[in-house]
Structure formats: structure tokens, C-alpha cells
Image (cartoon, rainbow, N blue to C red; front, side, top):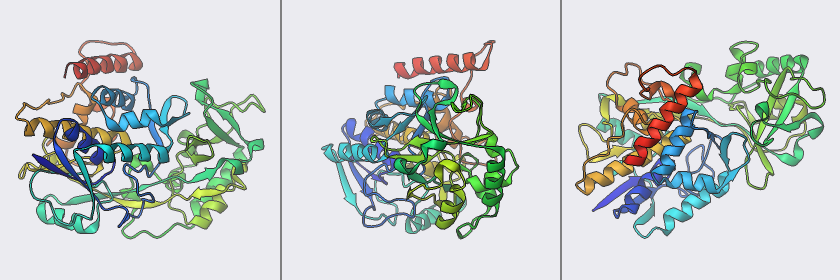
Length: 429
């Protein structure tokens, strides 16, 4: 009894871990470090490309609920995230280097997981889970296209935010705070006046972008818009998004600034900070020039520039069942962002579910069938639901989780009731 898992990202590592923990031998095939994708820089597994945040940690938030479900189900990714977390107010953020290193060492130490560093160009024989993510190499993508001629592969564009050295931030024009004072003062906030903001937006709109083959703004995932695309949507779009000043009064004035750029700690030492919400595909010199118009970042030293890349995903509702298996070839399963889930946590949860259900199948046990009342089940049912007419990548949200019956006053109270019921179901699985 052996399963080949292709791809050692968040989903692949989680699926491999669940299988091995259940006594199944796993070959985990990973093309790094011999071949790297356009967005990866480390040889470690489960590399975090876009940011270091796993988002909100409160169960009244859908992604917070999903993380708690995963903890209860024995998630490797959540254990490693919790052990490498850094201050981030009400969110869970990690030291991305230590996180990936811990996942890598855990995987490599497991006696039932054999990692083979090779590029997979064809669908392997036997039972296989493909978790190659949205940056699936062209050779394997071609093999998948041949396997799925009627469904095809879809795509959108994703981007990552820059990371700067904390010592290069001008703290004379910045202050530590978390929005509304929630949690510790974990963010560096860079205030801007109206004049500074309007000049910044004007330059941002007209800045030179990197040329990306096939790029169209309509193909950008809405949850990860480049800051320059956001700027073009209206004069206040950024102020209602990543530059929202509400709940962040400047201690120098006692008032909320016109706009605020937030920086979030990116490593345990606190020497690196990423610019929150500033995903971009500006050319590198333009990032230095335009982002340098933010007073606190005039002399910023960039340890990593923002980048944009093309993401590939399946038209999953047409071809996958709720366990991630191909409907017409069930020996082949998929997990992670290639299935059309969006986000680190969602990707790992997909690997968790596929790993658990594949393990039960191999052991002759009935499937768990995580229901729509749970976050992990609702997400799987979304990606396999035949009623979806125009399938797009999606983050977990309470809108796709089956709500409790009866009247519950207030959105937060309803979300908490949904979350508490979900966790009761997960505990009984």
C-alpha cells in the first residue's frame, strides 16, 4: 500500500503527513531544488510565497474556524505554524523561514515518507495525489491538459508583497499599533497626509509595470489585487483596503491619519517586515521609487521585491468529487490551490481532507464525509459542486458554510454559533 504525492507545498506535505500518520507508505515527489518555479526561492518544503500571514485566528472569522478544525484533526501545517508564529495582533503570522524549515524536518524525519527530488512530467502509476499548486510546471500541466481535454485548465494571476529591513524604516514617521488596540501593538504603521496619499496614488497609477505574458487585469484574483490595480479603481479604493486608517490613531497627533500603510513582522527576529496588501507587479526600480514616497519608507532597504505570477487551477466542479478524486479516474486525486481553493490555510485544509479520505479508502473504511456545516467540508463541496456555473478560486467564508436554523441576532453571534456547531461535529469525527 503506497501513495505518490506530487508536490511538497502546503497541501502536499499535509496530505503526505496524514497518510503516513495512518500507516501508509508515501513517496513525496518534489522538483526543488533542481528546478524552481518563478515564485520560489527556498529549497525547503511548504514555502510561503505571497505573505507570512495565515490571516485571522478568531473562530468568528471563517478562516479562524478552519484553522481550529485543522488543529483538532491533527494538521502538521497548523502545528508548525503555531510553533513558529510571530506577533500579528489578532492574526496568525509566522516566521516563514522557520515555518518551512520545521515542515521540512518533520516530513524528512517520518519513516514512512520517502522524498524524491525529481520533476514529475506525467501522471504516476498507482494511487496518486497531485498537489503541485498554482505554479504547476509546464510539462505536468501539459499532461493534465491531455488527461482532461474537455474540462481544461483555468488560470488567474497572483502577486506577492515586498519585504523590507526593519532598520531601514524611518520610525520618526511611523508608530507601532494594532487596529482598535486589539492584541499587542504588532504592526508598524506609516501614516500619510492627504497630499502625500494623492501624490503617491498618482505616481502609482502611472508607474511602469513588468511585462507578463498573457496578463490581463480581469484575470487577477480579487483577494490578491496588485496595489497599482487597486489604485486605478478609484481615489479612495486603497483607503478602504490596505491603507485603511480607521482604528489606528497616530500618537503624535491623537487623530486618525488620512491613510496608513501597515508593515507586518516577517521573521521571528523582527528584522524583516512585509508591506501589508502591497502585492505588486511594478518593475523593481519603480517599487523603490514609488513606495519611497511613503515617508517612513523613503530609505527602505528591500530584502525581497514584490512579484506577480500566473496561477493554474482546475475546473474542479466538473471533474472532481468531494474527496478530491477525478470522477472518471479515481486513482488520481488533487489537493491544494490547483483545485481552486485560495489561500494558505485553504490549500493546507484541502491536503488534509484528501489525505484523510484517501487513507480511509485504502484501509477499507467509510469516508468521513465532512459535512457542509463544517468549514473544511463546505470548502470541499464548493470545489466539487456541480451547480457552480463560473468557477473561480475562493477563500473560505461563512457564506458557503451551512448556517444554523432559527434566528440568531447579530452577524458575530451567528458566526460564533456556526463555528461552535462545526467544532462539535469535527470533535465527533
